[in-house]
Length: 424
Ligand code: SOE
Image (tube, rainbow, N blue to C red):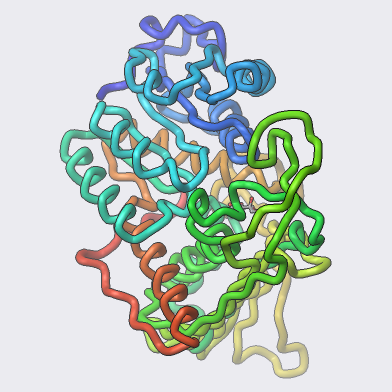
């Protein structure tokens, strides 16, 4: 599916295309418009303002089951049109890419149908609710890729400049042979037993709880930064709050008045802890919790090598702590690198040194890289197959936890994940 020319796309919204700008347009149709839908919308609208993207994203249509809420979101987020059935996006000539920002139980059906219809796909993480679903998505995605129809899974933290710098330092050998990987992704929005039910707490909708929601990020970024794969795990899961109030409102199980009624069972984990080995001989520890009191969105990664180590904290996302051994013992220790220099990943598109970025900018970088891949006819990364690698780790943790924490091997991928590419 080749993107349409700016002349063919006569949509009222999206970046203004003047006579001088003859870049082709890429029509986007998005499914879902809550938290991730808002983040993706801002990414599509900011990509062209900060980077010389080869395709101009056009926010063609937003799909949401509740037409009134979808229309309000479309107005607020800059979408030109609204559909109440995602399938309508697949029929639209002005949609070249479907951006899936809906709950996990919708990913497989929507992605497979969109790819079969010749639409590129960006799918939020985790890729699916099960290994079986993820394997089916990979098969459809790789067949579609042979037709030039591309797909990507949205592990956005790969596109935080400081984490890409960490990956480059590891890949360059500056840290030496890796010994330890330590990842904790801690939030506390569910620590209050009164926090209401939502789709994220329903196994049927979400697949798992903290493990798949934020543990997926922890697993992906650990594998991406180290360039190593988790080969086996032992894990524990816990649900601390087993019943939650059903709030009859948009974020509850049914849209409506906001009245509090009965409670419903929580069928997913509040927290996951697991240990792993990597195929590079390192030991890894992971923690993912949405009941970690006092932690708001605290993704912390530490990689310790024979020659040095790096420490990243999402709550200080413009910084990377770097320690390289062998210096002057008098002043040896970690130095704080502010990752905002022009030569740092993606920083060429932003501000002078020290003018820091935020959480949302990784979504912009994701959109920028995807637009570049589509224009160049390249397979985007992370691919659905890389999403399947994460899914297999999540599944192994669940199987380990269900078996009292016994060691569970993680099946090796059938073929290498997409080649790692230097960042933008
Ligand atoms: C969970 O609270 C969450 O919204 C994740 O679903 C997102 O992937 C993460 O970026 C922020 O936290």
